[in-house]
Length: 168
Image 1 (spheres, rainbow, N blue to C red):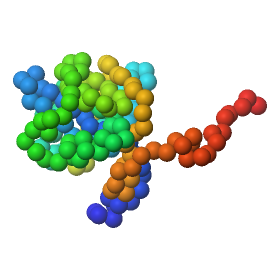
Image 2: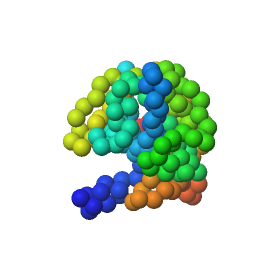
Image 3: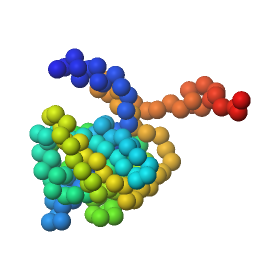
């Protein structure tokens, strides 16, 4: 199993924290790198959560979630929401998102969603959400690769000249 995880880890990804709140006020948050866009029309995203995660029942009950795409330098938030602890939100600056799920201040992008459907994904639950609100900020993303955090070096910062497509 470890060797499979290591092979999966060769795929560099962005990092997101998915947050939610139930109608009775239970909050949950979890770090994911399984976030992806699905469709522009309608606007859909998906992410995956271990069935064994302590927060799984809260996310399944809530019916809404927010995806917070982390910026470079926010690895402390990624680590915090990746660990089990009594209150992951203690000391974390948030603001309420549309429908209630907390939005992490300083994230590069926010997607507030209603859970459209869930699917069985083996040892994970696949959440598909319809985006009702989104916000984008400028900045560099937090990147995860081979078990460690890094930053994205865009073409201009890496000394590479971008290739522009030209009409034929």
